Image 1 (spheres, rainbow, N blue to C red):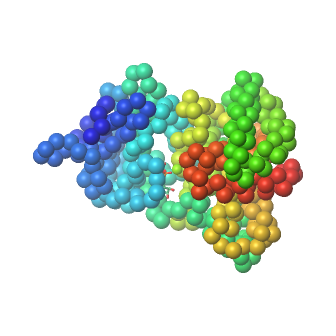
Image 2 (cartoon, rainbow, N blue to C red):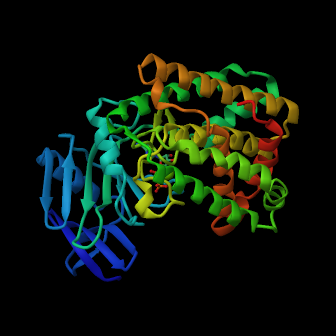
Image 3 (cartoon, helix red, strand yellow):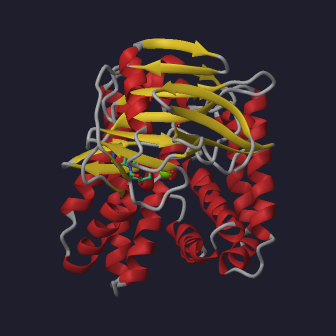
Length: 400
Ligand code: ADP
Ligand code: MG
């Protein structure tokens, strides 16, 4: 058993333990039996104990190095594993709540507590209702998220399922309306998200703009070095064009920035009971921890989502034989529908000034380059996506 660094007593023979060392720490559910403490499994009751703790103390309370924030007085019983492929460990309790243990504790400052609380305070309902959070902030370390508890959404699937299905049927039988309607719903949802985060608005400084530009240039060099991949070769051939495209990031000084989502793509949008909700406010995993919680221009989120719709089309074509021109038409229609609905909804909500679309294409390129580096370093089987996305983005031209 790895070393226990800290513990939060959850009562009745349950606790949350922070274990490990250095930067590889875990927040783990623990249960006591006759012999001593051991790692709890779904069914042992530790997630139920977290719900009891939240229900018993509304508001915010600090105990040792932990802070418990509760927005729910509900309890639930009967635990089961989420049973999906995930980084952390989620336990469903009574089909009402999801208790997520940060088994891969992220280096702080963790962006989620601030963003989730801001969204909740603004009355934003386009996310699973947050029930509570447990954060850990030992001296000398920035605060991070140890446990989060959200409303459970039955039958929820993310966009790598729902969007791929809709794009596949649109490209194979011409039923385009379901995907354009879904993309418009998601555009409106993201506009509502940004409008709810408007109170966090700040103005990007010249230093911010310089950092965005410099980071994009560094990324370009890393991605160009991936000469074994098709996308690495394509990128190298278009290097000057991309350099010129990224120039606009230098001009971002003075634009509005908010505590945006920061890692937005279709995989973060769940569909449950006909409703779309946005999840995962952990920030962008490819950024250093110190940058994950910084304000971003809204166009960063918009570009992430728009580009992921293009990736959906590529994933769809991998699993079903689809006519390329039909697929390209569906892809363009879905993206236009998303962008139009986003702009319209943001305007309707009175926050049009939050969106400056100028760097949209540069940021879509950045997103593809991030996927290239991510695939090369962590997930080689994903490389076919940037390999197809990059040439498509160059062909698309600069009209949007
Ligand atoms: P991780 O960060 O560990 O990968 P996520 O929070 O991204 O975990 O969730 C992984 C998956 O769990 C999602 O893609 C979705 O299928 C499911 N999921 C997440 N939150 C909920 C929820 N509130 N209700 C139902 N299912 C959820
Ligand atoms: Mg996730």
